[in-house]
Length: 212
Image (cartoon, rainbow, N blue to C red; front, side, top):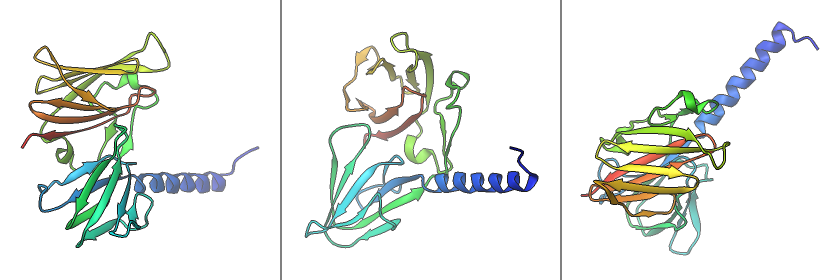
């Protein structure tokens, strides 16, 4: 079947519309109160959450059409991060909760071996809001145990080295083993690294919360 020029243009326009729709739906979660700094508390795109009022009614969630909810009375926020099994629970009396568009686009997913940058995600929002000055270099290799997946080494500029190998994450600092919880919270004397790694294609998302 031969495609005409008009059909090609229409299909191209439809594809662009779908791409733009997909990007616009990528939003990260931000919690701001007078107890947080200007950067607030941030969670990656796709994080599940529910906000309950005093009667246990869900008034805001990751599926809501609202993008901002102002807190002026007691609410309970339950968040289910992808990097751990336990929920994060916040009892809030003031502040705001936002779903902010990232307008990000994953790259090099088809051939991760050709891209060994610190992240496969390029984000349009201010990266410093998430890394707080910490930088990271990622090196990936094909798993010998499962050649369809990748192992990775994450080297941070504060001396922390994290190693993902066949489903297990370990991390060290100055030759000392660091505590890791879930998938993956890495604790150190400098603060907390929240690291998410997808071994099937190398996609990585991470934030750093320094100690106060």
